[in-house]
Length: 302
Image (cartoon, rainbow, N blue to C red; front, side, top):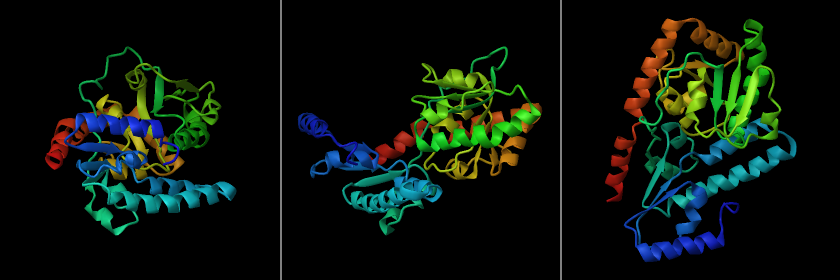
C-alpha cells in the first residue's frame, strides 16, 4: 500500500472529487483504497480484482530463507488489510468465485463476483499465410506469476518439446521483461519485450501456452487468446477462475508430460484444434461480455 500511495496524488484526487461531485466512486485494487477513505458522503465501490493475500501465500510456499520470511510477514498484513478495507465501501467485487473463496475473513461471503471482459471487436484474428511460432505466452513480463510461468516453460517443457520437434519456436511477448526472462532467449525462444499491438503475438502463433503456477484472478491473456481464435493450454489453477471445459474449450495440464502432449495434440490434430478454437471463441464471447458485466455493475451504483 505504501508503495502506491502518494500525497500529491491524494490531494489531486480530493480536489477533483470536490469539484466534480461524482455520483459514485469506483476504486480498482486495494492499493488505491487509501485515496478515498476520508470521503464519507459519496457512495463508493471497491473491486478487489484478485485476492492478493492468496497470491503472496503461494509465493511464500515456493520461497525459502529470508524471502520466505518476508512473504509470510506480508501475507499476514495483507490478510488483515483485505478485511479492514471491506468496511470502507458500499459495494465490493472480486474477479472470480475461486478468488472469493480464498479470502480469510467471514464478511467476504458478501463480496460480489464481477469477472473481466474482453473487447470482442478489437481482438479479432487476421489471416496469415504461415504462423511464425508454434507457441506464445503474453503478459507483463516483470510480474512474478508470469515470470514463474515462462521459466517453467523454458526449463521444464521446452527440452521435452525440442526432443520431439527440434525447430519448435516460442514467443514470450510483453512489457518490461525481467532479467531472468531475457536470459531465456535462445534459438528456440524469442523474448520480444513490448509490442505496439499485442494482437500480433496471438496472430503469429499456433498455440497459447499458459502453465500458471502461482497467480490469482482471471487471466485476461486467456480471454484475449480465445477471442483471437488461438487454442489455449493452461493449468488447473488458472482454469478454476476461467471455468472453461477441458478438452472442449481448452486443454488443461498439470505435469510437464501433460503439457507437452497437449501441445502436440493441437499441433498435429487439426480436428481437435478446430473444436477447441470454435468452442473457446463461443465460450469467451458469451461468458465474458463487457456489456452484460457493465449493466450488472450499474444496477448496484444507481
